[in-house]
Length: 337
Image 1 (tube, helix red, strand yellow):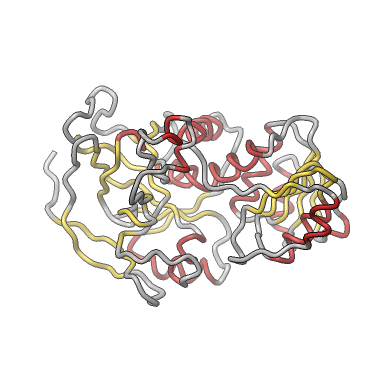
Image 2 (cartoon, rainbow, N blue to C red):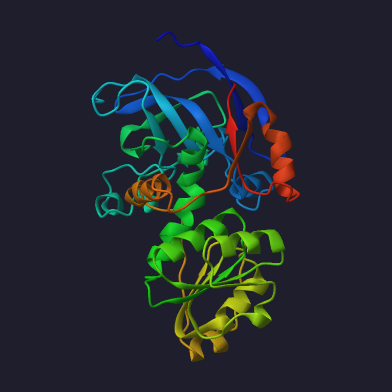
């Protein structure tokens, strides 16, 4: 396959600029142990906005886009051509575990301890370009029948709630409250129902509440006043101080609260309320590569159906603005042209 020498990429420049720079860069050569992918789709995420508005600043210049799926076009030295055949579609495990540190060896490669560690689209070149190099152990094969767009979105919008739900130990006896029904929240509802949990959802908007009911939610209401108290686990997909405080109140004594959303950078809580009831607050970040395999299988089997729209990568800055204004209803996957 003859590859172009140059490609279009959208680069985050360190500073206060709230947009990405469209630029031309060289198509990279895969190093030893790496694979060159032709990007099929790159999902857009609210985390992109946190970087651009400096809520979560990354003091580097890099190509953004941390939800990636693409086809193999070239192999670096030491990569098995049978395991990574040219033309095969793979999803990228964004946390980019090194595979060698203690955490990676214990299966928690979303918490890699590699020195100067950088994640795809979050410090290391991501999917807002036409071609990207990826470590071979960060690649997960996409089951037949799934599109690049759905696979890309699954790497975060399904993996993140899946990881959080597994950390909480939810099972068929669990009574669960879900706050916020954006892309992650709706996928979380589906995962919780796969596990057989009793699920109550809260959102201010009727459309996502209707969708949650279609996914099997046992109750879907517009106010926490109508939500049950003393639940086993609360998944806060908003992550504001208001929803976090209410989450603690709705959890049972010794219950679990997991703030997944990132609406507020700093969360505060009432120490007396938390300690007297021994509520556990559990942090969560993305998910592991083995969990990504499980998520792709759930989606391929139709047990989780992430809502995905597609749009051309060339309009990334326009779509980031729409995302900031809350005008994108589902999850958006950008496709290079």
